[in-house]
Image (cartoon, rainbow, N blue to C red; front, side):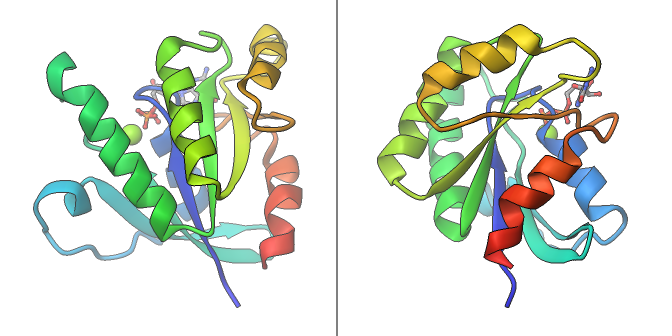
Length: 163
Ligand code: GDP
Ligand code: MG
């Protein structure tokens, strides 16, 4: 039995960095498809003894302000629907932003399993972000550093029950 994890959150919080860490070079071959499908990257993830599918929501970075909100919403909803569980990342250095609150709203409405991750929290950075994150009402946040590989043990423990 395997499961699918969607990594969601606003641009620049570190979704792709974490995706790349989990997938390494095991990037699934994805057809060149238009629209939303093209903006979801799928890979075979490995974390300790866990093997699962991970989805990265990409393609938002170059959207204009006008189209960003709607695209983010559609893409996120699509990824969350496809997944068994979602990892909602925020940037612990930036703290909780209005955009993050919008994502939290989407996730609460969809009512599926969510792990809240506070990224860029290596060293002492992000401590405040972790405290702020509790207010999103999505449970206890995991303190992560996708770039430095910190918090992967906590992520493992959060995902282990799905295996
Ligand atoms: P995405 O837009 O959510 O996919 O974010 P990216 O993975 O492209 O990362 C955006 C920026 O944040 C890049 O410059 C990364 O190097 C940086 N970044 C990602 N993870 C971390 C982290 O754990 N700590 C720090 N300090 N920077 C990070
Ligand atoms: Mg990305």
